[in-house]
Image (cartoon, rainbow, N blue to C red; front, side):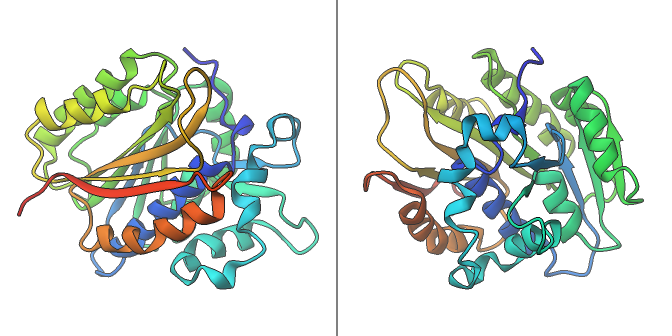
Length: 285
């Protein structure tokens, strides 16, 4: 299915959580001079116009990045994240453009690093090419991201991390994610894999099934779970939060998230119903 367009949701609470966490993971990788590769299986368009028709229709950024944008000095741990936002927006444009994960990675990676970006949607891949194709570090693939993940691993260089964040429009996608990462892991067991997932209403939520399968149906060495919710779970409709299952997390990323998420939950919560957690699903100790 190719109906999902992220421009409707750009800059929402899930984006802030995902991209803040990604910026911390990338910072950890950059602590060593050795080059690494960033892989994005569902890259989207790369850059989104918050003043555009789709974003204005949902206004999801109002309860997401717009709550933080005016106070970057209060988030020293997210300096890299805010630098990307500021570079993308001139003083004249104000707070108009929001970066997707490919643009965040492109700005934060160094000259010796590489980006491998995959996108299946025919319109999104064209937008992505427009925004990022001129960067010589960027390699674009118009293909299914989960298929590409298993086909293109192990990558060169071998050091690297993957962001996997499908739309989850179908329940089968959860199992497909587990199978794809399981296959990639057998070929590239030293890679870091960040699996994003939504926290949905009780009638639709599949997050517990995903975490169960990651623990019981794989041989991963370590898996860190981080989740952030802005309100209580509803019985029937809506996404109240999101999570990341991080296989082979960078050193001390758990401690960085433990420091960040309480404050981020408080800043984004609705009606004092925010919640966060950082736990080890599989621990090496």
